[in-house]
Image (cartoon, rainbow, N blue to C red):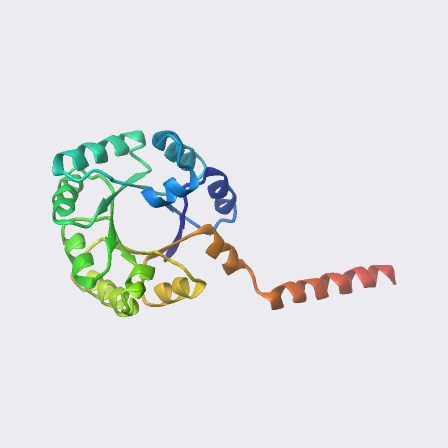
Length: 218
């Protein structure tokens, strides 16, 4: 299992990768438009690539098959060893996914809300299948069976796709996804920082440090 960082901020990416706990990055048009609305996309992504390791996912925004394929190959050419193309899950997206898989382009099929969708993406050759935890919950459904059932079918049929759980809004979303069999959870920086913190840890460290300082005084 692994954690990815859900961010397009190079400064934040550098800092969090220095912890040694994350092994890839996901971005999407919403994240980039919020964090850097005026940024050049290629420049921004390559800055993230430079301060991280593993795949950096970049999402397609065009809608026709030809446009999506051209856009995907353009992103991949930025850095073929690091760029992973995020393909939105649609009928056209599946066609594009199949062609990218045939070219050995790493793919992250995104915006999925169900077992059926994840299974189809895995059959079409996705490197990663991204299930959107928070948005599934917004619809009033329990995401945990979707993650468990998807993991079970991937394992049973020997499909190489890895499950990414995204749309993470609470620390408990991370815990549940990992317990239920997600290969990867992609986590926004504020939630990763919350995972560091526990008040009892802080008071215990302070207690130990104070005891040592007092001993030296004596």
